[in-house]
Length: 107
Image (cartoon, rainbow, N blue to C red; front, side, top):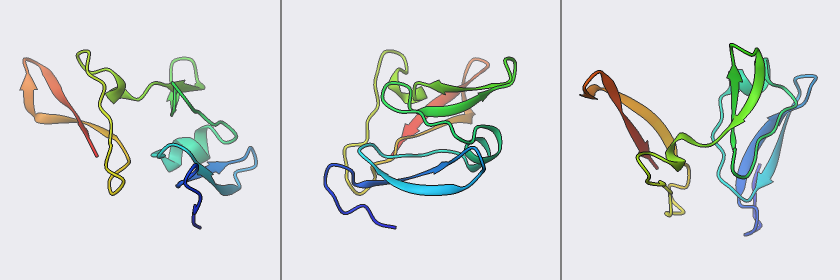
């Protein structure tokens, strides 16, 4: 699959309620988990201010969240390089601030 148009250059996968995958082109880079998208939340799509599809185990439901890197200590991380457009969040447990892991955002 390819996304040749400049307005929708990023490939994105979605699963319908029957569990069938399809690909589409998006204006924003996409990073999602197969387990949540296919097994827990088929048919759900998140966009705009709340682009991250997640599972709420307490409410036993699918939710759309803000990207964790959209506000870390008041700073909004972005990936501006077309070579590395996907913003990824992780926590570094080897470096801690007290008892808390350090949040890391990277492209």
